[in-house]
Length: 103
Image 1 (tube, rainbow, N blue to C red):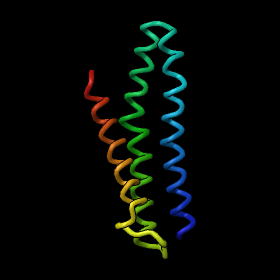
Image 2 (cartoon, helix red, strand yellow):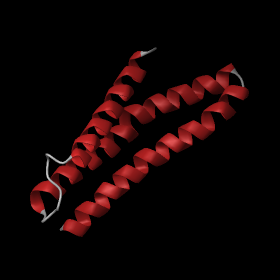
Image 3 (cartoon, rainbow, N blue to C red):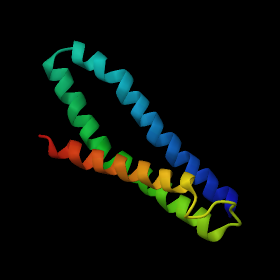
Image 4 (spheres, one colour):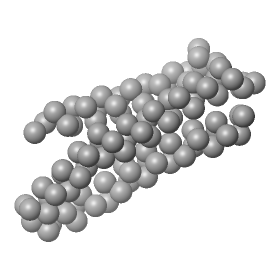
């Protein structure tokens, strides 16, 4: 069970970071392509914030909590590493909500 949860946790983290890196690399390209292309990219990244990052964040959170509760993990909810992880997911989620609100 631990290996499955850890795999899901890592897949969620890789998806989140991969999406961020893709956006970071593609935004300048779309900006140079003109206003219409930049608008399409902006709309697509908004959909990513709404759907893709929500799924990745939920996968990270649920699998992380399950790892703490259901396995013989050396980590606990009081560890700074776990608190930082929760903070990162919370901040990322808030940034997605705020980004979608800027229309």
